[in-house]
Length: 152
Image 1 (cartoon, rainbow, N blue to C red):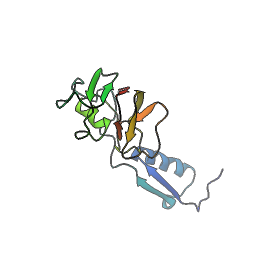
Image 2: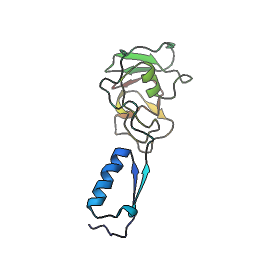
Image 3: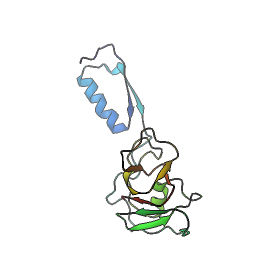
Image 4: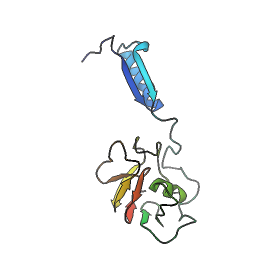
């Protein structure tokens, strides 16, 4: 498949992706004035990896109320109760517990936070652009509707 030199190419994504795509398009002969880019996220991930992301050991949050759905972070060995008035998402609860978790967008767009949903059920707010893979959850925009176990 050839790409016409008169074609305009529009790329939207994170900075690193767009840099790589610009190089690929240049090798394909697309003139720079035909390349159009829009940054997908404002910056790189604030917590770019699971390894060494937290300096504190995972713990229950200070305001755990012992009511509401229980959110268990399986790998971290921490369980805390969901309090909708305190946490916008499971990610926010994980952060309050110092559970290492990867994330970037907080809106279900990038899927950086996609983690295994061992058991339980969630709802999304906001709705992600694409659903996670079967058996997974986007912790950045998920709220539990009953007890859940997350592979974090």
